[in-house]
Image: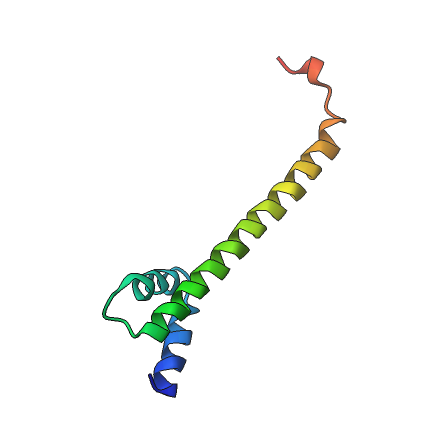
Length: 79
């Protein structure tokens, strides 16, 4: 692959949703260059790790936020 091919591949992979789909295609397609396929697999793994960490972070912050304000709610007045 040439430098131009790599630049296009990286730019396409940064497009939301379309880039993720293209990474999946490049990772599983047998006609894709082996280096590009390995790069796409690595990108997918890193992306999934960051998505998992983000979900965990948001959940922890959300539960902490809810726990902080749930003590102020008078549950006996709610039918």
